[in-house]
Length: 236
Image 1 (cartoon, rainbow, N blue to C red):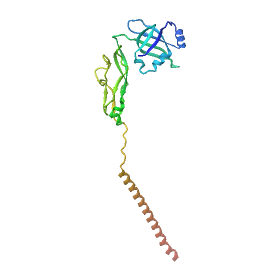
Image 2: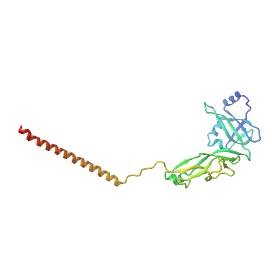
Image 3: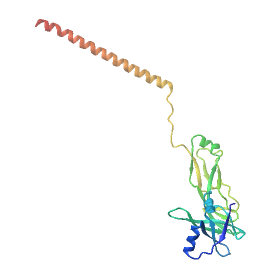
Image 4: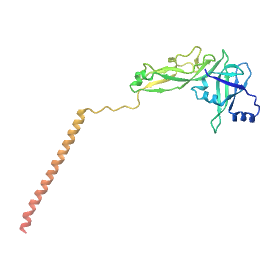
């Protein structure tokens, strides 16, 4: 779990918030539960480090505020439209016993152990994230799908995944598909046998010989015609 430092923010005007950003800070807010909302300021460097991590918006982090740590979940982040720098972060306070709806990413492992993929099959991913209803104290970082042993035609459904305790999909009443191992879309033509190549070569040779004989016959006919014309010329 990541730990970041924060300080109480006392800004009241837009100008004060802009000055905070110019000094390398990012304004934020912590809300949720029975405690009042808390305006905070964070280091831009720490915020950018958090954003660079996988699944930032579904990972619980710990914020140290005035010497006290509290668990929160990033819920929203806004960026500057020109510089693309983070300008504000919203954090949801984790309250024990509460539930939250999150989109959790799906991770596929052991591709090399799937006989179907080894034979040229394709992993067709239907859902890269699954929306789950989770207890705030038991939020999974990712859902693992093990491809070991899967053949072409295999269908991976939500029941295939071992969900943590008390974690349920928001889609109820059907065992929806996460991914399938599909047959390859490009069919490789079989190589021609050696016998077929030999027959093709023989056919080409026979065609060449026939053409040569036809040419010889044409030459002989032309010579015969010239011989017949000579006596007629002598009589004159």
